[in-house]
Image (cartoon, rainbow over all chains, first blue to last red; front, side, top):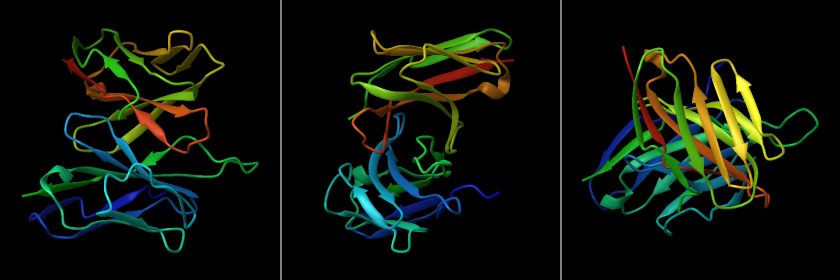
Amino acid sequence: GAGVSQSPRYKVAKRGQDVALRCDPISGHVSLFWYQQALGQGPEFLTYFQNEAQLDKSGLPSDRFFAERPEGSVSTLKIQRTQQEDSAVYLCASSPRQPGGRLSDTQYFGPGTRLTVL
Amino acid sequence: SQQGEEDPQALSIQEGENATMNCSYKTSINNLQWYRQNSGRGLVHLILIRSNEREKHSGRLRVTLDTSKKSSSLLITASRAADTASYFCATWGKQGAQKLVFGQGTRLTINP
């Protein structure tokens, strides 16, 4: 079946522009995560959704970052007034609910969106 | 901030040799996972070991976990050129937070 998809794969923005990054999780996956990965580093958590509810946004670096998942499926990460330090790969991941109802702790990652802010 | 460190940061070996990567972390965990990332691609889940387990195998992969030392190791046996990638450990905390905390990764190169 189809995996997690993200679009665009590459985005170049001028400093001060707003950008919107899209994530299509695996169909039926309850949990959705956004991570930011700087060059040569491991991914860092940004935010987490369970269905349409944003349960954790503790990793969002500033109020310029906003994420939504209005219908509990597709999610959008928006960055307003982009700055050079926002340049990174933004990864989306989803995970299902296990038989019995417990949330899975294994995540399925998309290919990422590489954002370059000039 | 990231959970801990991975060692070495880069490793280059000949095809057929074994590769060992180490990971240390800081807090109590529910489980520890290893992921692989090929250049320019997303992460692929390799293996998960729970805090009450000490060793786990999957194909050519062997993972150990020492919770007293807050460390884990990943062994890839009989390496292949296709194993060239970055490998990350990630921890799932005990406090119920639904997120993975990643290390900085080991860049593995397998030379033919």
